[in-house]
Amino acid sequence: MGRSAFFIRLAGCKVSCNWCDTKQSWRAESHPQKCVETLAYEAAEAEQAGAAFVVITGGEPLHHNLDSLTQAIREKSDLAVHIETSGVDPISGKPDWVTLSPKRHKPPLTDLLNYCNELKIVIHEPDDLLFAEEVATKAPNAFWLLQPGWKSDKGQSLAITYALRNPKWRLSLQSHKWLDLR
Image (cartoon, rainbow, N blue to C red; front, side, top):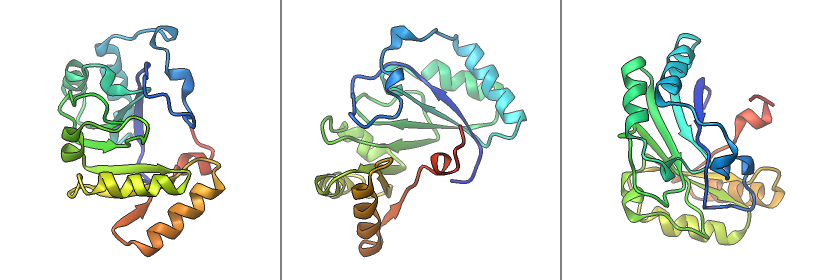
């Protein structure tokens, strides 16, 4: 938090979370394709403008093989490559950092739980906290984050209260939304 990031948002998602704030990314065919070299060039430009790292997200980024994209980014810049995924597909691309944000309705692959650097669970209701504890036991080396669902008063209250009572969990906020940044 607090560092400038260059986001590459890949289209296509079969996870279909009802609270998703980027539902427009779900249908891959609705978006123009860019070649890997163009994305890597844009990442290099973002680095020159002050970006500290690249975040590849979606949709669901691991619906795509990310090997050539992450390689091209590394060839054009010194930016670390982060991936934010729900974990429903195998890892690709050799990222420097993986944020795993699994969903109750489509649990992540076990390999991703072992591989991730941070585990971020979106909280809307009490069952989300139970799910958080269940998956956290399979990701013992990751940072554990609770993120209140956007504009969910109940999720906000649950996440804050739980993090206060359970210091192994951290609170994760979508600060760009609070600051109205895009």
